[in-house]
Image (cartoon, rainbow, N blue to C red):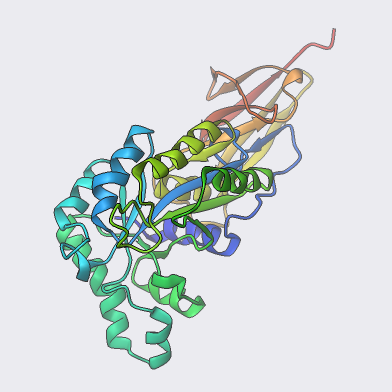
Length: 329
């Protein structure tokens, strides 16, 4: 079960920033905006919980090493073209995520304007309860149908222990081409953004809204993502949110300095409540030519080069990092 601090910190990052630019300090060592010092990051989202998400989309995602977050509608589960609860449980077991897309795909803004608190309760709280009952996992993400939301609704969702889904997403239409996606990813990378990629799935019968008719068309999009992995982190929704929550909750302070070395401390800031679980962050060296080696918790670490020419490594929160300087002789 997710929520609490992770949800609140991540939600602030995902909703208010909306995938905006992370202002990285100009220093010899800094926390990277995204994992592996990549300049952009995306996640893969699927709305409505149709059968093709389970039968066609998920296997293709897995073939390319990706996992998605599937927003399901409890009232529709097992009816017509919608997947059943057993499918949802299997997706979770295979490493995908399930989000709450409301009980019946209702427009939350209209319900709020009508003052229908009972129906809001059913659409937001009761739907989460039912998803947990039927899958064994309580959803921590709420995806607003029709992207109909406002700050009052965001607050109501958070009261329920859920978090609003990343709002600014690239929506795939039935005729979106690989070139369209590639051009969009150029923008993501050039502006160092985090964005969601929204699919409605693969439906050979053309019954669902804006779906690919041919599984090959969907796979072509995944091939574009695979090619772009050098400069783009393609992560799971919770994985990405947790990285951002950690990133924005830490400080990297120089605690000792000399002509031959510098020592930094990566720790949680005193003015925030740490996200649960801890974890690692990517750190970047701005001038690797000046450094002969790096030690984390006293142990040497492997340095890797990013596509932007910086050198990076990973460290867990709470680590002491020692930079060994090259001799100027």
